[in-house]
Length: 284
Image (cartoon, rainbow, N blue to C red; front, side):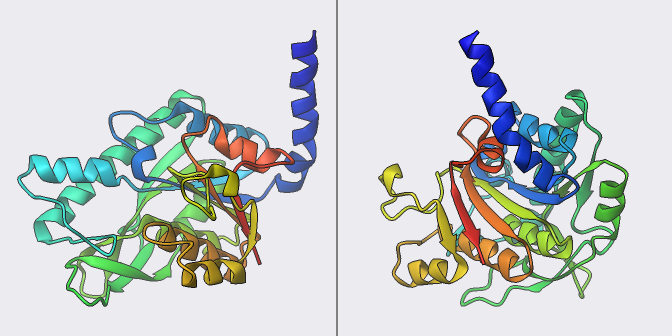
């Protein structure tokens, strides 16, 4: 009986959040080590389907770095990174395309198997992601930065109660396909859709004062505070593009951004539907 009462308490706690976010777009970036063609975390997909049945409109943007690296190595190419960006030649971009397409199909298949309607999209099609070659100290090859997004197809899917699942390739004016940072793509799509929330799933709890001590987690930060933490190098290396993607979303009109550890069971539900939350939320 006590266990049943606890479950009812959880549902009652979630009710005001379900009411508040029903009918709102939630963009979820699902990537890194959390996404692998060999196996996806069913808990993350269950959270997304729960959101769908609770009246929200989830949109998924995924990456797949570890799987891409394995495919490159199996093709005789040693992955190379400069400042966290993957160096991408003409052969590599073809491997990246195949790897992301494979992961995309897997996510769509799993969502459908769980009873949801889902549809996979590549950013290189329908002018979804337009890019220019990234300017950097070193030539990164076919690596682009987002110049515009066209969410016409995404909005149509959302209206039809279908979960869009997007992978981050973009097309340049030169007609070439470019590899694009998934955090940046997800952030720009969240802005274009006027999303209520931008949720970035990664492999750490969130932004912490001491990366080795989860007890130093910042539960809430303002966008300006995030920039100060970057300058003080509290936020460094791979967390910088994630934090800046969150700031970009906030400045573009998204209400809140969240950085969560995908390794925590039902992290998305715990962050969105409970009073405490388990990651870092960034607000304007």
